[in-house]
Image (cartoon, rainbow, N blue to C red; front, side, top):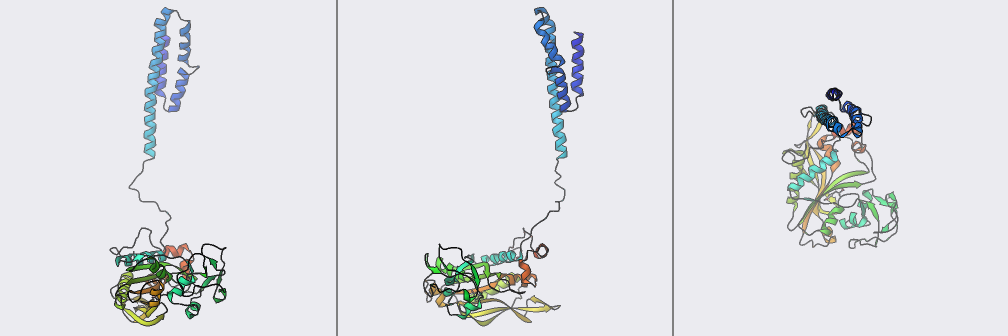
Length: 390
Ligand code: DAH
């Protein structure tokens, strides 16, 4: 009995002294494991007489129970302590400033396109899209630029070498200029091409074909802008083979030049975020508009730099005009019933004017230093109430 009593106190103090779960496990193995001292005592029960079992046996069992219970209590306490310790080290201090992390930025072209969409949405314009690989009917013919028209040469078009039937044919190869034309069937003045017809394909030279696609798909009234990439074989400080345009088109009954002028004035004032933007419309020529006008905005010289506003000098910003009756007709609408205006401008050029870049080529170099300098914060979404210039 004294042995049992001392074993009991020894066991309980060992359990009490265990500082970690591992140490407690070692104590358990020492006492209750296969070779453990309490296990050894339990093994003696078998050889005991019934009387002995009643007394010593019962004492051994209660020793085992007391030790098992003490182990359970200690284990729970150690586990709680371990959890508390972990929670203490993993605590997040929400008041700490955010760490410096690498961030991307919004490219000025994307920013300006968002600004334009915001401004025109406010005037009730939807955004329309068309393919960058276009056929010559949509890019030229339907826009009143027939086969022999000099404007086709002026556009420095990238043609695909081999015309292939729509929806079939092998991969086409891209070549430059007029020589690229092959003596294939051209749906010269006919209706929009259909599957199976042989077409000359090209990279669209302007966003104007989206006018055609929109008029063929939608019924008037139409009010759309069409931003997107366009391609011309041209490269210097102000020209890159790929650049961005935005097209505007309004088709309805009773549309006149006054609507065009108001729309452009409202747009340019909102875009440059100044009320003193002055517009000048110069008579011009585009095959798809009649009459046509080029639009200049006035600038003022401040320390030798051109600042939009006033009328000390003029900068050309867009082409525009009343949609030519032949274009309206090519899209299956009656020009006696419907009129409209259209305009087109370079998005990159607008960005350069507004944000002061002087070399267009840098737009597409992917130089991170340039993007860091001219880029916009990703969360600065342009809004008319907060300002479109972010
Ligand atoms: N498509 C013309 C170009 O790329 C720009 C243009 C001028 C578009 C007049 C128009 C317009 O819609 O009315 O040079």
